[in-house]
Image (cartoon, rainbow, N blue to C red):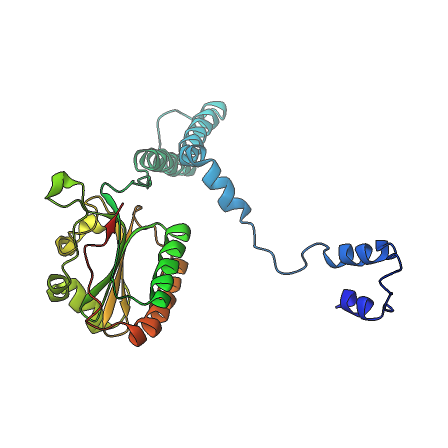
Length: 291
């Protein structure tokens, strides 16, 4: 704002005159581009330290229990108490309690070391790259579909996208399962009629809400999605109004975050507003082009 006021207050200079030096303007711009003064993300010091020293934290109960056990034995030896525990002695009862806690710590450390969370890694899809779009799709719809795909493929773990609307598969892009014909070099075509009869499609359309299959291998209904690569790790089923569905295949188990799911919901609403104006059953999906 200060820069704008400064520029408006400058007198007009004829074109034949040489422009003055803009050192003052540069100084104002530099002041305006100063340090960021908005809210900054909080840093979790303890959480970051634990994540960076996972092995040491898991071994910590063993060291604590071992040191406690040695301290009890040293205390009993140095204090001159008989090595045999005496139930009538308060010192013996305290030592027994301490030994029990020390052993518990050691066992807890051993459990922590033996049980570790399974590492989740990206699994490259095993399939054929394809790009299929209806021949009668208007340019405005085609550009929006391509925008949706490029955005999802860039920002999320989405590697396959299929959109079925009003009984027609209007888009199949990304990785697809290889067809049994042509020596497995061509992508499998989406059977819209068969998909719409399945429990996955019916459940999503009936509920009208997004369904997230975070680990696709655990769901028997994955057989209803044969057009996705066989090693697809996660799937999001996003309804598009009450006439369609978008199927997103990911390459990572639980790879779609909460923010991704909310954003995909908004994209589904935007696609519904566009498709409802231009897409009819006459927009059939041809053989398309496969890459």
